[in-house]
Image (cartoon, rainbow, N blue to C red):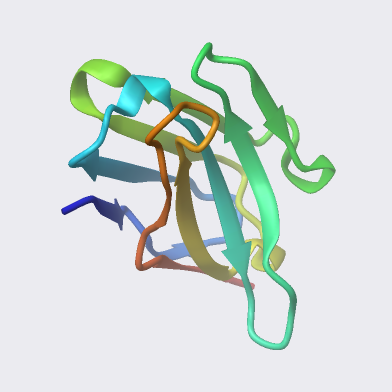
Length: 119
């Protein structure tokens, strides 16, 4: 009964901020790598930010300096702090939790949360 639940999306003006949360249950969260992806209508899904089990982070060039990914293993939660938002950031944001590098681990997706940035 693994569950991945995203929250924190909404409508914000250009230049504003949002904080997304990805809460996981039913798995050993500390043994996972977690990525935030986004998908806009008529576009491919793209990786926005990624954090490993050890805390190493990577970002898409389009969000570097504006977004920050972090994790709190005690709360089984990964966050995406999004600042200086632009209309081009509008998309459904999905959380991917991947534990396949460890024996018995799986790969899981949340349902997505909508982020809309007005121009």
